[in-house]
Length: 80
Image (cartoon, rainbow, N blue to C red; front, side, top):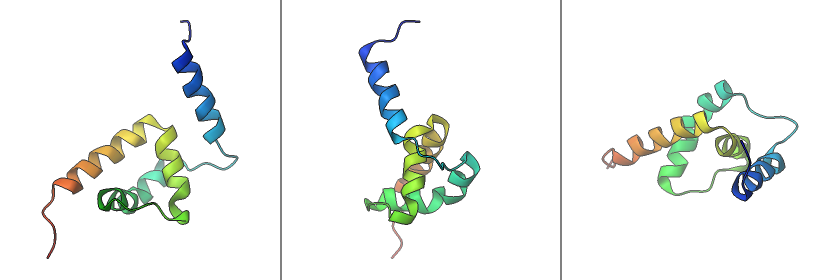
């Protein structure tokens, strides 16, 4: 399979976003509820959740799981 320019750019971006210490998927899933609530509220992730945000950008499976939770939370009625 030949790589086009878009694929090469995506691979280079992923390499730049990769850090020496990364969260595992299990660690991401543990932190995902708090991160998803921030996403729904439109708030920026705190520095403590920076690794969570980085994992979400790099891991397609976790990004899909988080996107599903964000959608579910966004559809819930607001609490008074």
